[in-house]
Amino acid sequence: MLKKLLLAACVAGFACGVSAAESVASVGPAVTPAAEKMVQQAIHSLSAKVRVDSIQPAPMPGFYQVIASGQLVYISADGKYLLNGDLVDLGRHESASDAAWARFRKDELAKVPASARIVYAPANPKYTVTVFTDVTCGFCRALHEEVAAFNKAGIAVEYLAWPREGVTTTAGRPTPTYTEMVSVWCAADPKAALTAAKQGHAPKQASCGNPVKDEFDLGVKLGVSGTPTIFGPDGRTLGGYVTPEQLLKALQQGG
Image (cartoon, rainbow, N blue to C red; front, side, top):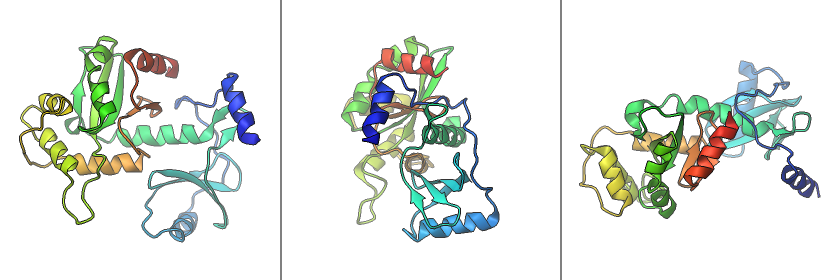
């Protein structure tokens, strides 16, 4: 019943999205070294393989806000309880979870050097988006066909690699998609190689020091689960395949 009420509120104009520029007050307990240890232990009691990437005071009393292995959860101050779900600030009529994700993603994406991205940009872009992409997925190819239109609308597209098959097979060998994307990123002209690959033309095999695995791992860290995934300059998720008109509207609404 509550889920239906929240959905109805969103449809009626109840702003469940959030601009990353707007901060949500943190009222949870302070993150001390002892608290960090407790949160780590609580998370690892579920799975020792989970990597905890961020621990912050939550925007509700008595909880920590935790980002771990691409998931955002809330851990009680005593380490006994975990909440998994969207936290809605009823006073501000917005998603506190979305705001936290946006800030985290913006900070993490800012660490990726320009040399690790394949960029298609107009001379003076008004907006820049980051797109996690794969060379074989149909929607990635459809999105890439719109690159010229994105650029004409003043939007720069910066690609990061995210092979959907992962980096290695269960046998420990590089996946075919990973190998192909390494060849693209290592090509003499990565932009031309990426465009050709998205048109179904396999690139000439090449290898070099490359960011493909690091970018795949970053995508997992940021909660990417499929391609394409588009992030705005403020860290908001702007969807998968979108038209130039839809993307421009979303960027303009973000402020």
